[in-house]
Length: 342
Image (cartoon, rainbow, N blue to C red):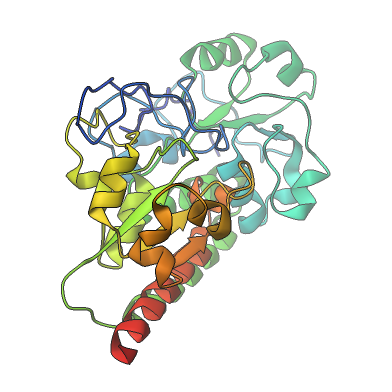
């Protein structure tokens, strides 16, 4: 088999936020939320970190990063890789899920799932990769999110094969990357099984979601400085598949898919549901949110519809996104049950 060697096409996700003034919904002093920097990552500040300021997101369903590049004369030989280095937490999760865990010899500092992967955590960085440190593991395949072209050039110069999985914007993109990794690691059967399981679970969850009168709105909090997400992000896509609408979609002058909202806007929109996605790294809870000035009057807080989500799952597009999808569906069920009881 041959390995793809592709400079990753960056999906349109960004935290390079434009400053907006006055009474606009976006704050005037954007700062980067302290979320896992290896998720939807680039060398830009983290998201659910983004890439490619304000560009439309790209679904890598047809992206060559998930297909073997047999036309490249410099591609690696047909040997099955047995010394894989993963510099992307999302793809570390994928590798272990499809059955390639035993082929992985080292993962980056943020690859904390599954538990077996933590035994292979190193101080390798996906943000500021050191090619000499990577090469010291004698890899026959390096897996990255494709956001560092300089690293890819250096790997090429050393003759080290690599595989890229840019940030996705749909479930199809997730499935394509799982399939691509399966092909690149000789685990096609395992990848197909993971994809089939995810598809079946997502279909089952979707079918069970109760109908609501009009779309419910939500506020997804990336950190306690009010960074949020719009529907143009992958996690925003996940919410939209369940019929939810981000209040950030309505913000004027937000400057991108990861806007920093201001308190007045959030309170005025009074979202039906609130999802906290900085519980692990910020220590935020429903109680700390309710203690903020004026927040106790929000409907979601008064109704107990603030949901503490797992930061890592929220910022990665691996197989555990099914768990996130289920949690959001359960949140919708809680909201509709409350309406019925009123």
